[in-house]
Amino acid sequence: MAIELVTYADLKSLLGLTDSAITDYPALGVIRDSVTAAFDTYLGRALDPIARTVTIYVGAQPTAIIKLNGVPISAVASVSVTILGDSESYTENEDYEVTGYGIRLLSKVKNCSIAITYTGGMTVVPDAVNRAALLQVAYEFQSKDQIGSESVSTDGGTVTRPVLGLLKEVQRLLDPHKHPLRW
Image (cartoon, rainbow, N blue to C red):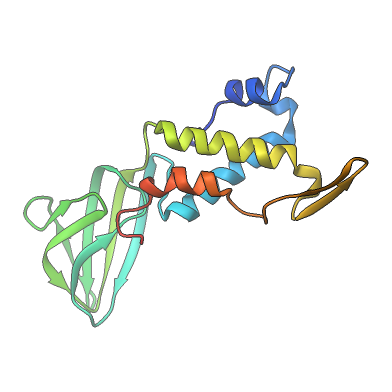
């Protein structure tokens, strides 16, 4: 299930659209999906609440902090640490604990790979993230014919637009929701 940061009903109301489904406006669906991807990148986290399997490589610097992008984590299915070809399964509360940023191992590791299968991501979209998505999708949809333009000449003069990227207000709304380990 892909997370829906802003509903078509909200976009329809704001933009004054008349058709009944987002599929009637193909560009709008593409823009909404691309805004979700842009938010993932800006926030440093994966928003979709899905099952993921990741492999993390730890070098010579010992660490117990393992950053996972799909936060908050709702379940961890398995954690396996491989050092020099030997794998060991870790158990929650005995070998690691789930945190707001991923997992914290109860002992530091180095020169290893860690395979983690977990489920995580936003299950409820905060109001600020919903508003940010509404603003960004509407802005991009309304200016889809001038993608990348910083100024547009019309019959009435010239309009200056922000450079391509997330709007400043959108960034301000998103900042409190960045991954805890992203500065």
